[in-house]
Length: 127
Image (tube, rainbow, N blue to C red; front, side, top):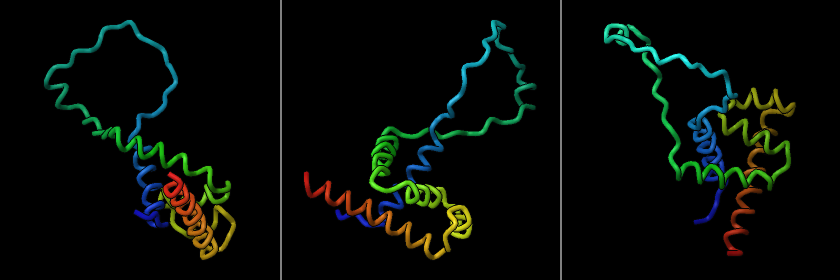
């Protein structure tokens, strides 16, 4: 398998999806010594349903961690572009945030992905 820019971009998008599945980091708060409230079935039916949260699978976390190690192969401006696009930020917004024209931002993003793909190929061929 030869690494392409599209494959690298897909891995960063998958990385973002996995990051969203991970539990939020929370500060340690106050602890209560009160017993849990026991609700009646009628009270339970009237409560708002809790949103279903899917957790990340171990292989997704492994791929995410591997993808996060790739980011050191590009400079800071390219990292910013890669993450904005991984979060699916529209090109017009990317151009505004980075201060470069839209087509230039696309070209820089593609070059950053190409750079990562070349590094991955070099790493694969060395092994």
